[in-house]
Amino acid sequence: MRGRPIIVAALALVVAALSACGSSSSTGTSTSTASTARPVGGTTIQIRDYAFSPASLQVKVGATITVTNADEVAHTLTAKDKSFDTGRLEPGKSATITLRTAGTFAYLCSFHPYMQGSIQVTS
Image (cartoon, rainbow, N blue to C red; front, side, top):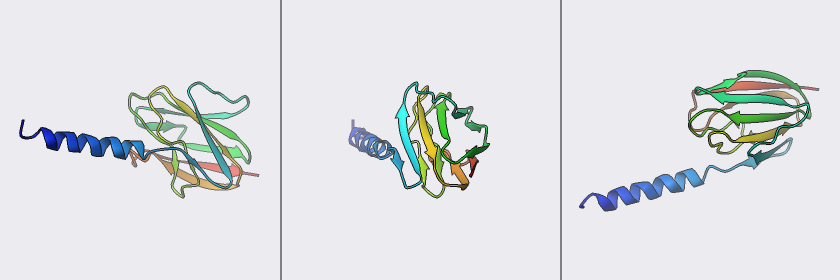
């Protein structure tokens, strides 16, 4: 029982760290989370086997992209410049982002930074 306070403290730190993973939005993009929302005429990125599919995407300004986590663990799709972030996506959950600014946006999973991709937004 001597190690129990350490385990409890460690679990508290993990819970605090995980709860800090929320969704955000910034000028030029908007983000919303929904469990089954699929925009009509939008584009999708699926997360499966610790990879984004497609990893490289080209869309027009104003396009709505649905990101779906089909993996068995939580992931994010987070712009490296922090311009968009789906927040924590649990297995089976989806979020949408709308890109309103032209440019190329590199992204990654904040939990698994080796998972990377890019979205090119054209006018």
